[in-house]
Amino acid sequence: VELASGCAFFGGARLVRNLVTKSEVINAGWSISGGTASDENTFLESAGGSTHQIATGFPTLGTYLLEVWIKRGAGSTRHLRLEVSSTDLARVNFNLDTGEVASIAQSGTIALINYGADASVDAGGYRRFYIRVNVSASASNSFYPVRLTEGLNGSISYSGDGTSSVLVRKIKISDVTNYDASYVPEYVSVGVL
Image 1: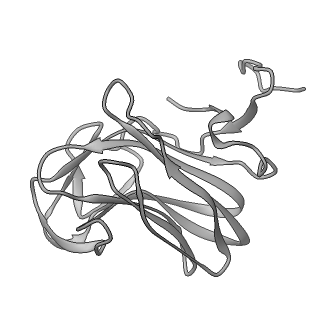
Image 2: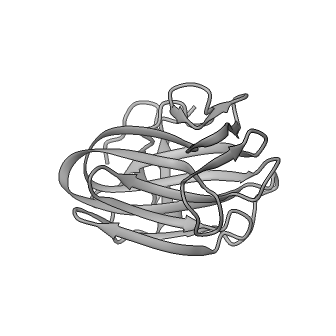
């Protein structure tokens, strides 16, 4: 097995590269709307009507895993949507506090393969949420690791209060094409901060 220089070999693990250049900070390298990154890890929604989200985009074709480690910050009850979209989409609405799935949607050339959240939070109180999608036609897609919803299954466009926030510890987007039969947690990521 040939590995890139500096990569460790782990028996049985899959080598995937994190496509996110700033995976542990949200105040650099992300498209942010409807809020601000008040520090490296805090997304503070803005006051007024808007879509409150963090996004990035790039051309895609294949299978992708989007993961985010997130927890509630201050303010109102907001919930989380993970989404990959262009004219087609795959999205999952989650209860931010419990990790339970509220609803799913998919259309066109983007299909959900699997999705979920870790059953428990880590020592810092963060929970990992993920979706794995297959993009069957080449397109420039947007990845939304943070898209807040007003209620559990609410709209992504709502009037923010200017005080509600979420804390984001890490975001990973990995091209896992040809690893479709693998169990999600066995991926080993390289190229992160």
